[in-house]
Image (cartoon, rainbow, N blue to C red; front, side):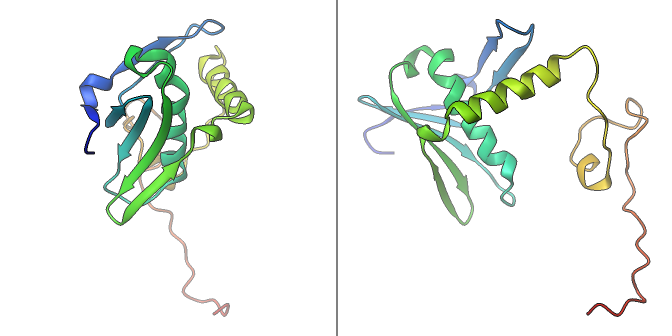
Length: 152
């Protein structure tokens, strides 16, 4: 980005401690680029697009301005960079509805009563917690005997 001062990964690491919940959130945006009073927070992806990618950048846009000194007071925008293109994310997407959703997620994660587990092959295959520590983990793709159907 010509004319921008670019900070990468470790330079962008931050940690913020909640006031209402005893939780620490730490993040490390891939790229923060700053010029004048404008900044971009970018996350580079190598795989397929997922909804969680958008939420990750929205969380960056929520927390970066209060967690990284050099980003305070900037007009920040987000970007998801995929192999096949770029998705622009506007700061106004971090509205009160999103903030409430974020607070709700933090409340759930910090609750002394664990959230209800809903294991599935589709979810567990992306999880780093091994079966040694999670007895509910599903490692096998479910057997779907669908060979004899007449749907299509």
